[in-house]
Length: 344
Image (cartoon, rainbow, N blue to C red; front, side, top):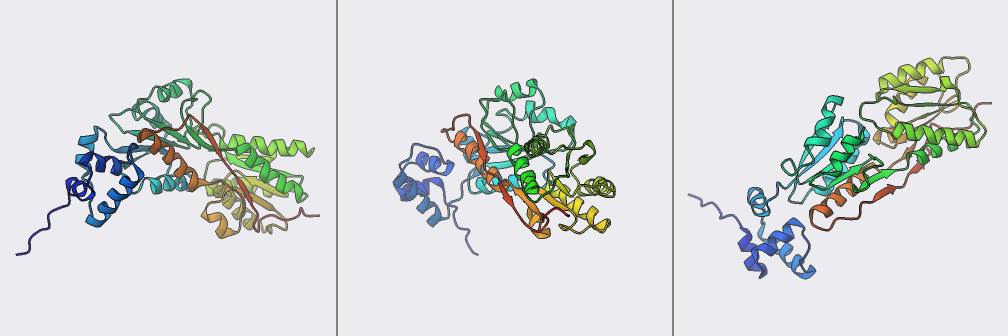
């Protein structure tokens, strides 16, 4: 009868590396206070011996849950999913488990800002694309007893919470200035509804940048050229089809997301409009779909923002938090095949 191999323990690694079990534990948890040479030696023996930490033992010895909570709105949204994947990528290989709270309706918001940010739930909290609606929610986060980092979310009162964001106003200007340089003067805008239950401010900020670019060029935006839809391709397609069917339709549209821009492309196809000869289109995000359909878009670093937010959170969990920064990541205009000169 074959004998089962005895599992490698933390004491086995410590004995081979000539350090204490506590030092091995600190190395595996990524904590400071271990010399770099010692850290490398411990990791070499961890790999050589095939040591795998016992999660239950780690939790018991550290007094922590070794769990990171992430709250997201509709994690199936491409931009949210990309950010979440970035966070998961950085968390892989650490001692921490991940719990994702998918907030799908407004009634679930209170749990996001009042119940989750406490040690009995998790050691740290990452908030993606959900901004606090009121001062009560912001105060709850300020008083939390665990580290919190926000990605694509902001609130003026949260001066003590690190945030990783992009300048959506600048993104709106980038998109619209590109269309203006191509000679377009009648430019529509399609974005999320202003009263969305998650208080996502990205559409509002992108619209503000759009208006600023038009104003700087001496162009007046017409009320009928502003379309507000749910964050779905189907609804964007329906609204865009009505706008593009009019005799004095715009020659270009700036969509506040690539998903909605795909709906505009479908509407143009429904009406027999040629893109970009008769209609130019700019999206926002640069999700995988944008490259597939050749969409000109404003690229924001979705995956990288998730990684950066998780890095800030892990730094805080390991005892060396960063200052409460508001880190703004760069944007880039990616020109593809959906934009061209305005029709004569």
